Length: 205
Image (tube, rainbow, N blue to C red; front, side):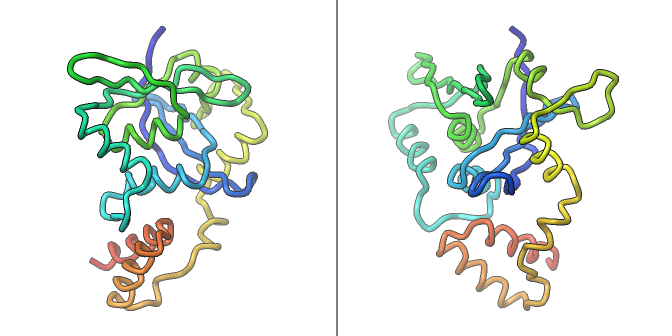
């Protein structure tokens, strides 16, 4: 079956499920997006891997796994989202040690968090993207996502006016205070807040 490479488009909080986040993967050289609902911890771990400037004071589980794997010469080569059953995505981690390749079953959120840390590509099969992918441009073929997916897509691909209203406004703080707040947010493991503060700092530099 044909494999299609996916890139991470973004992460957004899902208001349809308490404590759930929507991870959006985009088709490389295509217009379809693949929405996946993940938990808060996994969303935090993926966000930290994407935000290179934020370093947690203690290693998260996925960071620990990477260190452990590297000590024993294990490398993650790629991640494949290979099955979709009852709305749940199933993934495999393709790893290698001393020239021997192993396939490990994993939750998709964990697999992606590790793929980011190993700079490993993420793939899915064309059949899965055909079934669950969401068109982001008008298409003569009508694709109807589930109601849950519609809510997620509306939230992610709108101008995110609703989320911007709920976020704390850091524009009134001085640069000195922002840097102090960033340090405190990282120490308290409030990584979503830390990312927002860092964005405000970046605007001024």
